[in-house]
Image (cartoon, rainbow, N blue to C red; front, side):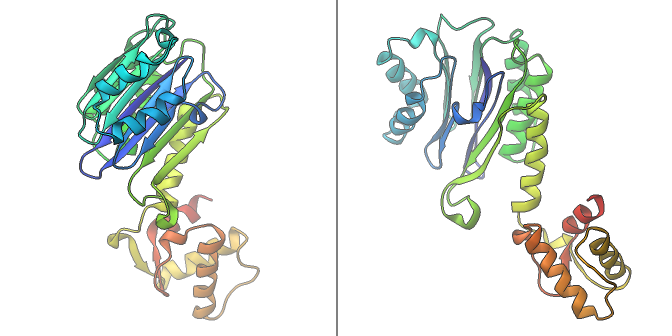
Amino acid sequence: MTFSIVGYDPETKELGVAVASKFLSVGAVVPFAKAGVGAIATQSWANLDYGKHGLELLENGLTPEEVVKELISNDDKFASRQVGIVDTNGQSATFTGDDCYDWAGGSAGKNFAAQGNILVDQHTVEAMESTFQQTLGSLSERLLAALLAGDAAGGDSRGKQSAALLIVKENGSYGGYNDRYIDLRVDDHEEPVQELSRLVKLHKLYFEPTLPEDVVAIEGGLADELQNLLYENGHLQRELTEHDDLLDAVQSYHLIENFDERVQQRGLIDQKVVEYMRIK
């Protein structure tokens, strides 16, 4: 009832899962991942133990192929299951049981495994595979591009409802407390993959660090524009006469709008914040 792709980036050590389905809140069921270990998508009458136990087996040194064999050998309903696995060596495996509803199948290669069931046809998996291999950028960008390509190629034959993206890396969470770098879900939407794409862009805006070339001084015409934007966006009630008052208002705006990761030294601002202000 789902199509998904699991992936690994050997440069950043990120692991992840992108998934979409005509199923409510697919992100609460299919994706499992642990930094330094691997990523797993369990679907088609999903057995969630495949995710939890599969990661334990990977952590104990089994290859993805060995993990698949172990999981299905202990499951009397394995013929109805589908699973994709990738580890931190870039090894991967995909399995589709004989009782999964057509079209069902998968493809696995270096650093990825793509799979789906109840699809329009095989083109969804083929599109995910080729797009992941040909796309440049971060793991999240590559997985999302693959999911978008699979969606455009046909996707779930029953329709659309939910999508999710999970990316893990060591200390990747907000504040560095755990490994959940990106954990975004669209639980019920007419175009869930497109909506997921919008959320990923917001995640980049809010949580990725500022690039040095994006830092500019709040002075001259930009200072005047910021004052106008703050007023138009409801963050100022009056025209300011002191530059320090404007800098205070800019600082307050960052905190109110949750731009914690893009706060700059006093008198400076990230251009991506300014761009956001312009379109609000």
